[in-house]
Amino acid sequence: MPRVIRSEISDTSASGSRKCRSNAATACGRAEASTDVAKLSIVGVAVGSTPGVAGTMFAAVSGVGANIEMIATSEVRVSVVIPARFAQDALKAVHHAFDLDVADGDA
Image 1: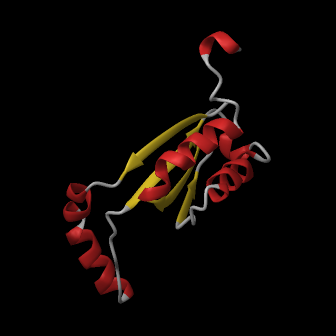
Image 2: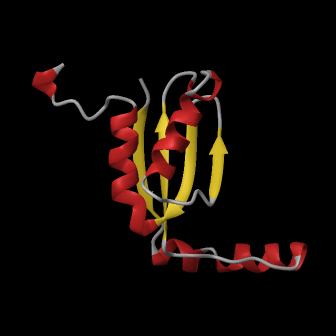
């Protein structure tokens, strides 16, 4: 079963990335940063190679009305960037989708 991790991008992180954005803008013509986003990740052994895991996560996140702005994957992690206002609801929805919202005594 995957673990679910949520983090919000802070103002400090955004301001610390100004040089990187500047370099990207020079190389690509444009770069933007937003502080009103959150990253939600599921982590577990073979998460990236297990059929249906990413789709289950994406369905849960979109089910609360969040538009997925970015997706990153690896063998052990699937992460999405969504508007921060949906972070808490998306976290709960992903927990529910993977049956991680069961209380300790209920299992």
